[in-house]
Image (cartoon, rainbow, N blue to C red; front, side, top):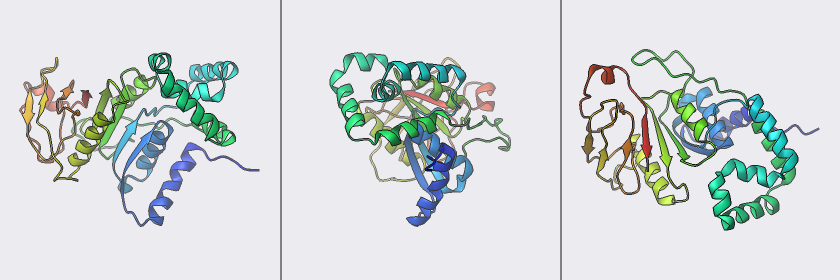
Length: 273
């Protein structure tokens, strides 16, 4: 009898994939279940992952309320509608009928329905990643991502709460939370991905945009700089960082913080575009 792999088992396949293609390390990008699988992979094989772009990630196991909601929706809706509800917010579903119809057609006619049901069941049975935010300034003794991570979510996405919660559990010196007003604007995400990769020292010749960081309520200073690398940006080159960014030393101009508290406690960067 065929046993569909769990999320953990799918993540365990990735080292074999890298070995097959003779890759020592990768920068990974995943959406939803793919983001969860990549995060699990990075937690277990941190030396093989240089950076992660995680879109709509939920690091937590499905709770009882989620389980009940899925059961009820499963009785009332077909699988395509369940998938669409997972991918899009209510406003998008009600207003963008052509897009939703396209996705529904794709799910119904181009995806193996038996495998889709098993995949959804596997994702709903995922375990909690059990990640914790490390103590600032100390040795990392908790389970957390050790590579730079860019968390991406749309403002109206059904995954926004899960992504924000994930951000609170990761190392703030290596994590950026990017909230996008319109995830259907590829240019915004393309720019963000490019700058994230440049922040790790790659693509140094790619053009950069002057960034202006706004003053936050916590008293972090205004930073404006030109450089060959950065981690927080938009397609127009203007980012609003709502928390202080403790950069890891990739040649970025850093303005002094206005107070010892901000210097002592690093905060993850939140960018809206």
